[in-house]
Image 1 (cartoon, rainbow, N blue to C red):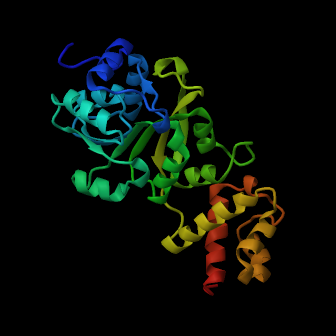
Image 2: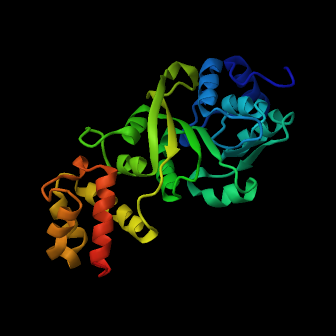
Length: 293
């Protein structure tokens, strides 16, 4: 085998797995990208320059990782599978700026990782062929951290990608859609066939690009925003009036004022409000709850 194997070749990837005693784990949602054209399209969408800091989540067999390493990126790859991490460390030896650490991305302290591994003042990019089993929780973790990235290019389950870019009134619009729109500007770049993975997944994939938006709310207001968004979508068929009265009985008598100042109809249902409208409701409700009005 060559010093640097072709990690987009099914035959070479399978030979590597045999050499290292590895096999795909269904429990971890491992479906490895084994198509060079798709890998190049995904990394091109991130537009990485030499020396730029990049975090990759779930490098797997290294289809994206090797391309990023060759670009000269200052790369930190987070892999939860110790066997895969050991294999990737060997593959990446020609590129000392590419590092693999064993880390569960769902438990990652994103701000701390960026602070500890990269020089201050340089915007960090994020890339991932994300295991489908963690797609939703992973995105929530990014938004909880305030989306501390310059750009993210993520390959996700198609349905999750559609939820992330859904607009008010769409059938798949929900709390995750609101959070995505609040923290980022998102766009689906292209869909990916199940045939370019090993093992072949049973669902389709999409590649999504996200870029940050300026926050609309102060810290306390944003905490309330999360509480409202998550709370109202638990009973999405109820009106905003009924949902807010349930969540905040202390300001039940002021809700008409809240909705009027936020230009929201009390009879509106959650799926009809934009992120900006939820932000307005949150800011005004925060003032009433804290007697600031």
